[in-house]
Length: 423
Image (cartoon, rainbow, N blue to C red; front, top):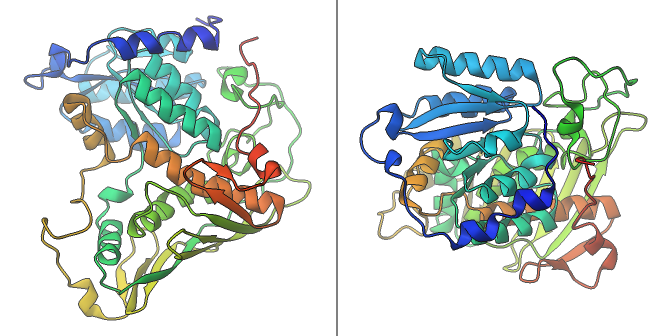
């Protein structure tokens, strides 16, 4: 069933939700019987939503996957089968329209695993519907990220980001070593991220049966359907839906970089970028890129495409790794054997995985490991780099006002126009 509901109506409940007293429903407490589990709905069950998020939540005894939603009927069917096979039941519900899933009063929380351009609109709609939310990263623009932070505060719901790095031992230890002075005073961060892909232009074809193309596009500009546009790597390389491979992989390694630099609640104050966008291609984000950032404390961060690595350099040594979750390396092996007592370390203890952390916070009503504010600061760092690249010059950024310094052209790029997809 497809219904036309305005964005205003979707968000109208925010004030009422914020004013309601906070309590934990009785079904969230007690043993792990189905009626006592946290009822989860999944919006977006493609490659990551199905293969990682859904399957990870199915391993949590206090979670109960009860509904799925996707614009592809085939993906809905696959996810329903996965859930029903796991529970050995036939009770999983499926929705073609996310608004119908959000109207389901039996659902306590949702997990959003869609392309980037849907992250914030769907999160805000879910929060307004009274759901706790775990959403994938990153945001699409600086402005919408701040809007989300404000909306989370007003809604009074739990919001978590689907990002695992702070609970990955390799990246937690890197940040801990640096924050505790194992390499002396930090002065340089070097990051390598995968390059983007060059996808050739395609001719439009009829929308395949079982796909709601208008809903897939949503707030993005209208474009005719082409054969591979919705593929997980293709859409990431298109400006309308994503910030490119840079914001995809940057969401991981740049978070650890900012945590190590005590700047996870801030952003750089200056960025310069360059990149190569192929001509006559479906790809509209830089395939290769090089960026330079400077933070208020003088630390410089160099980011370039062509690998996966992270390295922190200080006046007394360096520490880093090569490859995703690669073995830790240092200028002196003694650094890698340093241990810090819980009461002495300048970094929080390593949290559980994002899925476990989200469920714990739904119960406790505490702020998750990755909050909306953390998402905003991390995404902003990447967005200002993309904006510097687009303008082809250095931009200066004020993290307090979240605006560019005396730069109207750059400020204009903090937001984008949204398509009225419900018209």
